[in-house]
Image (cartoon, rainbow, N blue to C red; front, top):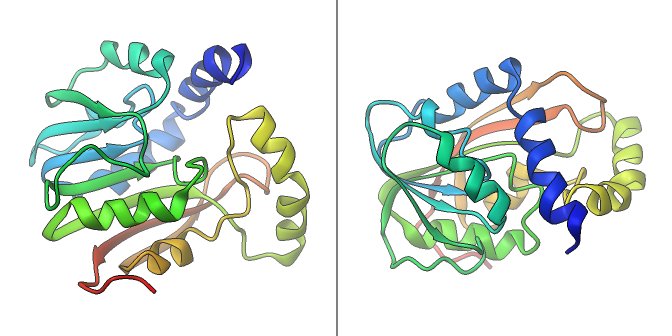
Amino acid sequence: MGVWSEQVVPRVTDVALGRAAVTRLRERALAPATGVVLDLGSGSAPNLPLMPPAVTRVLAVEPSAVARRLARRRSGPPLEHVGLDGAALELPDDAVDTVVSTFTLCTIPDLDAALREVGRVLRPGGEFLFLDHGLAPDPRVQRWQHRLTGLQQRLFAGCHLERAIDRRVEAAGLVVGELEHAAMPGPSVLNHLYLGRARHSGHAPD
């Protein structure tokens, strides 16, 4: 980690993912959230003011100190930072009603472990709500995503361009019940979005 990753990337991300088009997508992704919510990779807390009235409390996991400071300006349900690492959550089993992840599954280093943790901390009947960019359906775009992922990781704190988000969620033992492929303004290697809802299958992943 250096000055770029620690100081610049959180601020760039705050601006780039704070555009009106992205905010509308966040609102759609967060609409089903209820009760105690875990925001996985909460960043500067752009989700906080968008939480629906059914949300009573937000527990945030975020490794960036700069992003956590930026989060203090947000209003919304009570917010508590509860950890730094999505792959090793400092929460008991069945602790939350909803887990949300917006534009963070692309970046978490050990994504499979983090998704298993999602299933562990969700209460029975709870939902995992996700919105992220990832592998595009067009093979030509996919080739560029694979080529450019190394550069993207260096520039944006480990962000991957080529993760098939729905397949990774299901491989962790979560069942995707609703999935929409959407798009946001930007280069084709970045703008293919996965917007979905998932529940725990009740079985441990292979």
